[in-house]
Length: 124
Image 1 (cartoon, rainbow, N blue to C red):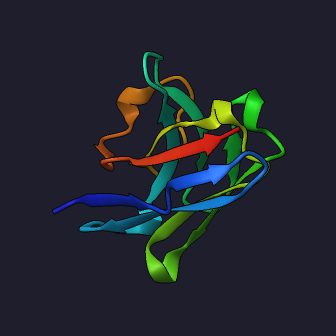
Image 2: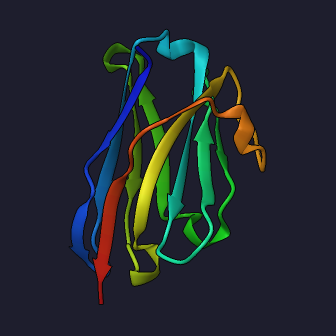
């Protein structure tokens, strides 16, 4: 069974840091890109960034550039989203999703499996 499971969310003060993990199972991790998305209450889902199978990263969301960093560990079948200098506007449910081989920008249909999400709350 294909599974993606996010973890690492929580409550943090503005200026703090969190590292989200996306643990993959049930498929060959190295054959897939991992995208990160978020959705705040009452808002549309946002595409944050993506890391391809080779480790090449793509950053899509201007508001987090320079603060969020992607990585992946093939030995652990896990992708990471390191977030620093968090702001209250970063509060959202964060999701990871997989896409075959490469990243797809503004094409969520390419992501065929999603995690359940992890809540990130940044207090001011």
